[in-house]
Length: 251
Image (cartoon, rainbow, N blue to C red):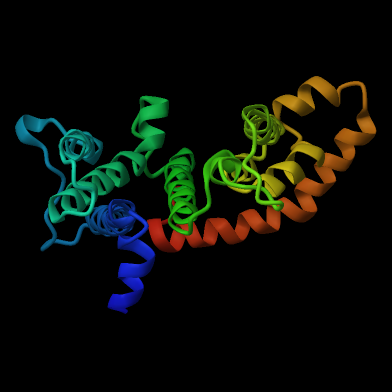
């Protein structure tokens, strides 16, 4: 195990990213356990922090942790040191606390236990997926592949690099415009996934559907059918996972 950790994490310079990833997941799980205990009214669990009657949301602590971890991390030159690892963990924990209340920040309302509050869990899931891909060595916008040699062993030219990155950005942007958030964001790392999202039908309520399908009712009907038959079952599974990890929203 130690040899694997040194070979796959420390030697490639991924120690800080690994520490960020671990701290992010642990902080998210801890804060969700905490808020669910508070919601259930467990007497022995510490309640909300309300000095002077003001409820301090955990996003505030998250911002403080992010500032300390981020600024401190920039000041550390040795990326493989214990100090760098601890600061990365602090930054990861702060990021988890902030994203766990992402919906509150977006709405500027306390929607934590409402249906809109699921957006926070979605944001956390996306962050975990993107960070996990980065740990596996997948480069965003195919940058890693763009700056390495092609199959013939020849380094790509500047124009070829711009073409590779630009194509990836275009496919990812089209996926997002078509309402496929997961496909578009993960497509930043996986170009084939972004391509699939870019060429397939848009979701019914997406900007692309509003712009392009008004005069093409058959495409809108197909899009709605796909949403009912394919996306909704996947959404039910995702909601069940969200409810298990983060708690069920209020009715």
